[in-house]
Amino acid sequence: MQRLTVVALVVALAAVSAAALAAGPKKTLGDQFWTTPDLASYPVASIAMLPPATYDDNADARKQVELAVGQALRGSGHRWASAMLVRDLLMKTGGDSLLHAIHEKLLKDPRLDSLDAPRVARIVRTRALLTVRVDQLERRELEIGQSGRPSTSVQLRAALVDSTGRLLWTVYSSETLEGSAQDANANVIGVKASGLNNTAVGGTTSAPSYAEVLTKVCQRWTESFPRRAAQDSSRAAPDSSRAGK
Image (cartoon, rainbow, N blue to C red; front, side, top):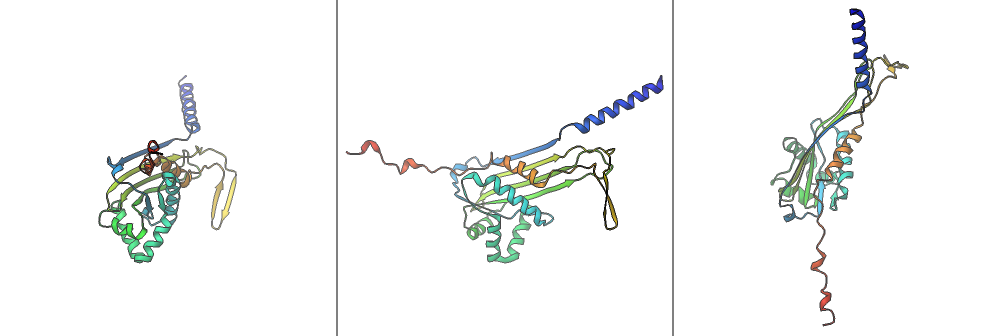
């Protein structure tokens, strides 16, 4: 009788594990937005996006973040100077040393202050500057024989300042997306030979791409990011009630 109870318990635990693996992909997310209360007092017509700062100086990470942020915020109504254009303008003015100095400052504080903002704004010829720092960009893949879900994690910080360095908007975003469940007991289809290494093929799942997670994060920014105020056409409109008088 005791043996039957143990067997039943093992079967129940296996069923619970299978159900957990079959559950849909999970995700965790969080955003912390801040906007200056008197934003309307600082009209901004143009914004330059600076090259994103990364702790590991990963060029591919910078490009993916540039693309995701640019696509998400381009509908804000502002005239935008892309990170690529800004990089070229800064290089022509101060070379690698200027780019490196700005990068190092953003690693300490993900915004430009009142000392740097005026100079950079003059170089890129915009009224505001958007800076982004990549705090985390990581994919966790599972090995053959592991059970669970692969995942991709992203943490970004961004800040918008005007040409004097006044802080207008900030955001901190964190998100982890999980891929499909992987079962360690899944059958291996075959073996892939590569040099001295033999890798099992089949039975594995992949973590979500960086582009997928970055797109989700940056699309949420559009709801909070300051939009360019529409011009008040009533000031220039003629008073029709006086026409003909």
